[in-house]
Length: 620
Picture (tube, rainbow, N blue to C red):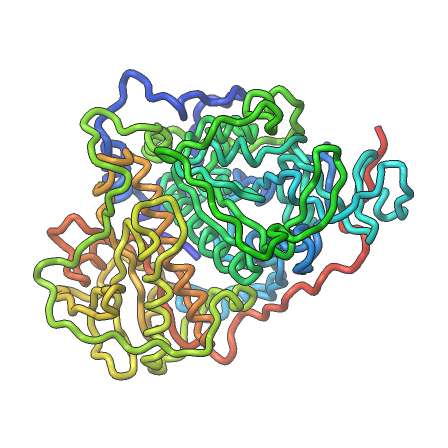
């Protein structure tokens, strides 16, 4: 997904990390006395990335690409959704978000996109792209009593030998033999497609109560980043990739949840320290970046009584949708005395320990300073503005003539494309892109989405979308600014070609046949007065979200797309006519017609059969 040119890549990722501390970080809640003006850490990070040296990778320092909690109880997830059981919906949602869903037979290519002659590799693939295939994002799941799928068997009921190996003493199953999911906090293990129970108790109210726009939810998924997984290779530049990848996964979650009938909302504003502490994260090795809340469809949401009796029933027995409560000033009401435990009560309960060795903390440097600044709840000195203000960029005043964007093609369904999406490693066939296909991709990329940023209901809040037309039927080649409200394209007077920039060889290969390039742009410090340095990571997440939504739309139309992060550079800014403005290119999505053959053979992993997917638990 993401790459960075060898001529302008991060410095060695093996720089000495900061002190390894096991204590929970408190710096994510309250800024220290040396707090600088909002946007200062962002500006310093951007300057460091412009002047970064050549890439040097110590592969011996590479950490594992997934984590486990070996002492935790496990719940095996269904591979496909049963629309009548919440656990099946959760299983398919996590499968298509971070699961291992495909086998890839890959041949090595040289810098020119030709086979290198080295032996092929057999890899496992995941549904969404990841920078360098490093997968730094983890998922934690909070479920409440409402997610229990039917009457639960008592702990004394007999289990099959296979299930007895998978579920520890005290775990429960439904009468149909399906795992019963007790209320608790879980970690998703993508290797085995199971949930690992970290702590019992209903964590949903505690998590939703920490969000900037708290609202009721049946299920919460927290996306966190293990920083060293990306930064061992990319150094400080890895932080940008991690933020964009979080946005990619938010778009993926919205698409999959929409396909499954789940109402979803993305939350990027919360007290980082409190959420990290609730999840048992220290904020330096791993930290929360986004929270997703989900509401079950009416026909699948079960309830659990206080007595523990679980019964599936429609969430809206009357057949009418339930109304969403409104809170004065956005604050939730005081909880009754018998409400689920709050943060401190949950924290007093034991939590499972993760596997060793632990990843290294984020190395001290511009990225670490930016992340610390981004976790402050309030803007520093000089902060101003309202969180409800929209920061949507405007086109440069010297934008040229306006053209109607192509009418979007119909009959395609981007959420259905999540299983087919793949990043082409060897470019595209140099054939024109149908105008209707481009129109559909633009509509998908520029549409609104449910999130806690201002004005996202009508479109991106922090970014705008530019287009490089390379071979689009009926559209002259050149640079354009897309206006999603009017579905129009505005010519941009670029002064150079993107090929003149510091691009990697695989990006140059892609541009030889690509039909178009979508480029999210924005002002990296426009919202710093309101959101502080958190604006940087929110904007990067939105750029990733836009790229993934465009990718899924392209895939649904039989096309292919791939992010080339090295394409977001100063030369590209000049090609878009953005030089001398506050706007900068944030990402670079090449798209076109995939080749009929190539170095990859990808096959989906079939649905799991009813067999063990891990060795039996050993009695202690």
